Image (cartoon, rainbow, N blue to C red; front, side):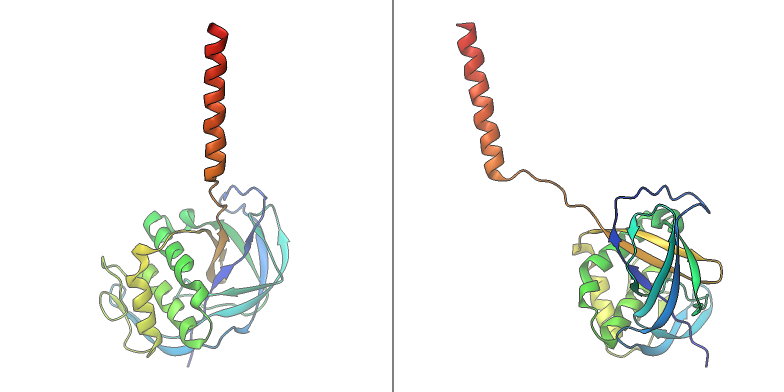
Length: 232
């Protein structure tokens, strides 16, 4: 029985500039090497498109090679990933992907925000086949659900399978509103394979420490006294 497989990629941020122009972005070659933590098998139903899927859900691994072009990603030799497509099969041979911004790919700032919150809040919990499948299910739910609320047993995108993993996914989806967005997201696209998500950590916001603020206040007081003395 044929099953689709797919991915979500993590990588480090570099100082290179990236404009995200159509068909002009940097590229990277990926080779599929297998499941990172194992996977769960089950079925999905999308009533909005009248389609059913018999799929594996879980994290998978790639080897990387041949990076080309200025990129915001510093590629390591390996990537772990989940898929974002259900209608396209993964090409498991060496495949070239182009890097684009997530906003330009999805055209939906709210969706990009939700996926970023899912990654920021729960990616660190992915450590075995069950949690790996749960993350994949939650990601598919965010991308494919057309109702206003998320859940794997309600709405237009559902599943009655993936025991255990489905409940974890629902818990993560219900907690999205309390999560922050600590990453920037990009998409790796290929005409012959599933599209992949790439996350880079956002630079920390610089906040003055209390001691620095106190020194600044003393400096302003001293400046005021000096100006008053000069007038007298």
